[in-house]
Structures are given as C-alpha cells and as structure tokens.
Image (cartoon, rainbow, N blue to C red; front, side, top):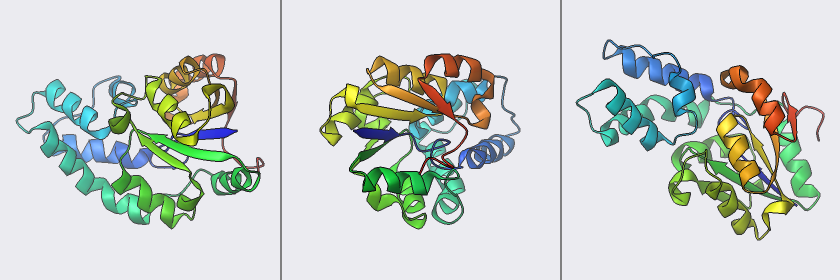
Length: 209
C-alpha cells in the first residue's frame, strides 16, 4: 500500500508562515490581500503564486524576483521553526514499520521541505518525492499523484492520499485514489465540500499510530 502526503498544512504546520510572508511582501508595497486571495493561490507552487501576485497587483518585479523575496522570508522558518502536525511523525513510522511505501507530493520545493523533514526526523521515511514543478501541473490536477504512485511502483488504486485543500482532494479522487482530508484552518470554508469529496477526514494524526 502506498501513502501519498501533501506537505504544507497536511504534514507541516507551515501555513501561518506563508500568511505572514504574504503580509510582509504586500505591506512593503502598501498592498493588502483581496478577498479570496488564499483560496486562489492554495493549489499553486511558489513560482505560480509569484506570477499570479505580480500579475494581480501589476507589480514591476518579475515573478522570479518575487519568488526569491518570498524564499528569503520563509527559508529560516522551514529550517528551524516549523513543526509537524500532531501525531504525524508516529503515523509515518507506523506506515514504514508495517511495510507501506510513503511519498511526498507537494507544491513546495526541496530547499524548504527537506530541512524541515530532516529536523523533525522523518525525511528518511519517504520512498519518493514529487513536486508540482516536476509533474508540470498544479495541486488541482491528478498528474502529481499519478507520478507519486509511479515512483512508488504502485497502481493508483493501491494508494491513499492525505490532503488539506479541496483542489487536492478532488485531484486525488480524479487520479483514482482513496483520499483522507486533513482539517486545516485555511480550508474551513470548504470543509463540508471537502468531507463530501474525501473518503474520510482527520483533525490530526494523534491516535493513528
């Protein structure tokens, strides 16, 4: 059996870091987040989100320059501060000890997720890593999950995805996989729809090990 985990919000308590990064980036330019901003960018990787922000606000920076500014803001937090969702470490170890295969499928990038997973003692538990940049898609498309399954050497129907946003849940189901939703603050507005789309849901991983 394969288990495919999203990273931000699903395994790592990192989303407040991005909220603060967005606030710092925009406030430095005298701007504020419009309504629906976070729902619009939740399924994007950083360069996609940077392109969206530059275009939305008509900024003079290139998307690449905006991306580097965001990285400078969040890099230290990932390396030194961000913790895992309660129970996640124990659950990942249980999966590994029982012979399951584990993949990370994320819109984040290795320079951020790797030091966080290493510091929290779980990086070595993963059998595969896939990013939306590698898969050439957003988190709202099934390709990233299908590529993760391929890297695990398993068919989609033998994989379970853990996701915290509605586009991710829908894409996982479109890939033919079971999906467990993980409750996260930014998705509370979509929570009823998420629960209907997913096969089950959890608030955290406590008690699952």
